[in-house]
Image 1 (tube, rainbow, N blue to C red):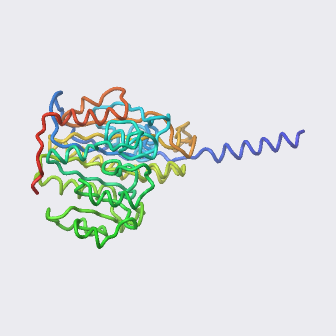
Image 2: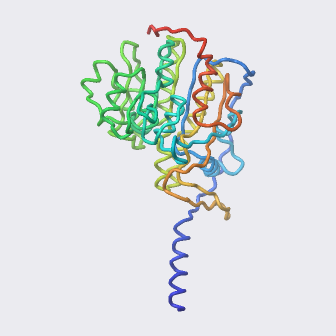
Image 3: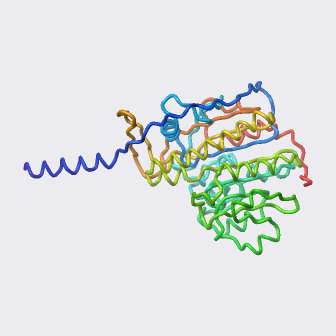
Length: 375
């Protein structure tokens, strides 16, 4: 009996030790950004939707602690308007990225794995399709492939997020003007060159492109492997923003996703998650500065869902102890951070479908005229 008890104790101890991890507390000074006061009731010209895939409140908290310390303030922390969003899909408390991104894109709940289709597989209008008819440019950035679920929900109508080749064809023929990320292996590049400028390396982001063709950047076979020769989310987003800011159209819609926060959380890899979040927060910093200067752009930062059930348990000397609850998505509500004209709409509790209608309201969409963007 004693041997069995000892064996059980050893098993429990081994499980406990593998379930927790220590993350060193950082000591960086906060860089405070210039935050403007936007009076209520202003209408936005442009929308930027920044998505941290799998990025719950505790992913933000742990990154804050690891980057700068307990009292450090990230760029995301300095966004003045904060709400909370539920994330469930049509028939499940759990959502995948396809159903969640479809909620923002179309304003409708759908089944997990569906992209811009309702539960009966009927096509739903996406916000990019709607804005294209109003003379807007549309752009997306992802550190995953550009045919992955979150970006794909903005342009694809299909009953499985995993039909990548079909999704790639839909992207080429969509109203997306700029698409930057991975996913090279899913495209027939020679064919795509007929309609798009094709960017295949980081250096190409330094070049100038006219508006004779759309732009697609495919910087890796699938998701972008992080490295010095590969573009970051921040670099791709800055490129897209410069191109969109030429002010040739009535406005623009830009979605930029830190896709691999989710992947690191699925792997319960805290250090990799923090690395991905750091790039995301630097991207947010640039976007805040853009909004402050531009004054006509609404920035929304959110997540499609939380991944990993991350908990921050205690502090021991110069580290914090963390624990992952799962390798899967959870139904924990996520944050909605907003800055710019119309940002007051995003306070309080909301559903992920509400973001679609709030974005349209912020643009005064019902009063926009149908136009063609004459580039």
